[in-house]
Length: 306
Ligand SMILES: NC(=O)c1ccc[n+]([C@@H]2O[C@H](COP(=O)([O-])OP(=O)(O)OC[C@H]3O[C@@H](n4cnc5c(N)ncnc54)[C@H](OP(=O)(O)O)[C@@H]3O)[C@@H](O)[C@H]2O)c1
Image 1 (cartoon, rainbow, N blue to C red):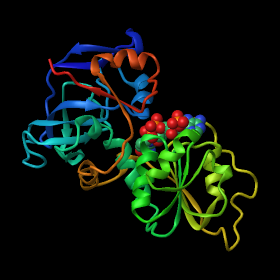
Image 2 (tube, helix red, strand yellow; image 1 turned 45 degrees about the vertical axis):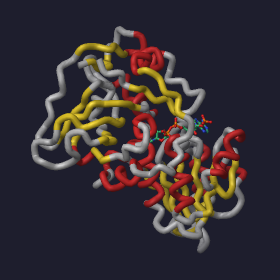
Image 3 (cartoon, helix red, strand yellow; image 1 turned 60 degrees about the horizontal axis):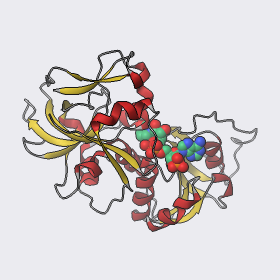
């Protein structure tokens, strides 16, 4: 089969190569990969991979070999999957059944491919805030793959969603998805929030913390700004209105029992993942070499099987 392999000498550090078929462990099934949508984390991980490794965390496809231990989806079922052990940018991959969820056949493979890492992270991030019914929830980085889904999940959970996205042209769309307020930066938000899910970091995280109600939490899920967080003196001096506030880190790979949530997301025809920029996977090397640019929504690669 063919797969994109780390190759330090190649443009973008990747080569489309002929590689052996994956050999599954007893708890792994083999899927034919139909589509994948590289995550920021996939791209960030590339330089650290050894030559010969196959990158790629998540995607969508169809089961071609069941797990030997008898668990998980059956042959022929459409699935979404994720594994931070990589190996997804390939025609076939082995993946643990504990990271593989049945998916709706009424949803395109390309839409499904955008879900596993970002949408599951969004769901888990919002859930960490507890009941958000009737409460103000701040979503920072609301136009990103994580943020967009977080806005929808928080809104359908009854939150008053305060969405922050630097591109004001996207604000109308965020309101359509359920945001009650939109802002270009956290600094312009007025009034306290019950909790925040931050995908940007840097100054936005510092400002999000300052907005918390007593007992509130910022889920520091992403760090897209790549900037330091510098808290002014007094940020952690509490009074009755600011007691017991917290910031918590998040790592999807440490979250247990993901299949039910992945199944929920992969059955949801109403979830709006935004415009998709679908390309042949043979273009992946050039795209990575160009720095993974986005212009028309999430970039999804369709695997044209040989
Ligand atoms: N901890 C975990 O387990 C986990 C899981 C999933 C994702 N993440 C992380 O979460 C972050 C978001 O992931 P994603 O998939 O949503 O990425 P994405 O689709 O690429 O979205 C990135 C978002 O960040 C915004 N952004 C980038 N740089 C910014 C800056 N300097 N100031 C303000 N906004 C900025 C972008 O705005 P524009 O649309 O205007 O460009 C976009 O809304 C990434 O850091 C990713 O690695 C972590």
